[in-house]
Length: 526
Image (cartoon, rainbow, N blue to C red; front, side):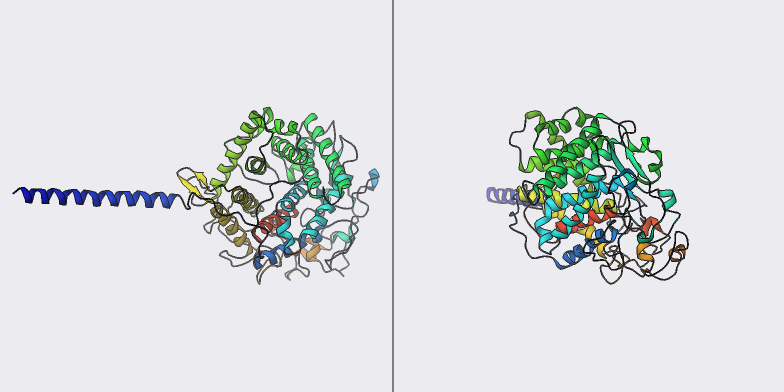
């Protein structure tokens, strides 16, 4: 009797132990499922490794679009169907504004997106110059950057005057011609103390400050000139506040600015990195940060909104360089980093806070016009953040109850790049010249008209309306991109989808440079 009871009791406890073991195992599996990695940080990469061919090939192609877009007297011209153009730009004010780059498929130099192009190209070079160099694209990138900054320097002839546009978009869009044969007037537009443009002046300050770091070791005099302009422009932007879209209503149709607080923070962040002057850090972490940073509210990164870029740029301070920071500055930067983390969590498809703004195939999708700007910009920020984590041996990013490793974040960045390069339902590349299938009817005047054609302003429209593919390839142009249903209409008249932009070029160059090989992040820009 007693033996049987003990036997039954032993069996009961055995069953309880089995149930407990199953429960514990389930909990462990759940935790492992939520945490996609171990708590141990991955090893820090060494120098750049072997290039990944598809990204290296795509980077070489993407870099060529800057040559396609160049204005002025072309030096060592590599694009056979391009020639000198706009040589007299600025002459009515005794300025040489012949350089710079055309914005897209037209022939206007819009200062706001052009300055953003320079800032993003500088950032790509600063972070990934060693990786660009593995496929011999570092020097071309610097040359293209200098072509823009030479123009920006000349466009800033005095501390409180900045020329922000060359050409009249209305008259320009009445023509369809090659830039080499333009004869229409190209008026200049400026911001000044009575017609302020805080947004465009601050973005140009960011461009100058970031570029000063690029050229610091290779041309100290040029770097110093850029930094002087950056400081003057920031002071001008801060002192004479006002949106350039309000001062110059005509720009609202083309590059309307929705606010200038983000540009002030962006410019101050770059000036801090260029100078290490604590006054710029105080600027972004104290009252102006509270007024403009929108801490805790993730936003999309674009030519119009620099907040997400500012958050990632300031995060690198906490990852790599907290020496000498005051408690208030450190606390303020922590707010930027927390918001940057929220941006990353929104991008990761398996995150509990993942954005629903994407196509069925996983492309971030925000806007019908130039739909690829946001996914490529987002992917570039993700690649940067992933590399900051990896180099600082930060093991994971927490998104609610889920955790993600640097590799998870990089995987997202790769997914967006791969979509652009052809891993999409259309099985086509949106980077002109890359792969076997890419847009043939790009909305781009120079590409659509044979180089030997004799056309004036209006008779060139026959080339816009031609049913033949472009006779010239706008090599490296990143077109606007697909609709949300992942369709694309390859037509020159479809400027919404088929027009490449110079700032898209800087974004895709940055993204491809981050992926072309692996390397530890640059911990200091000096």
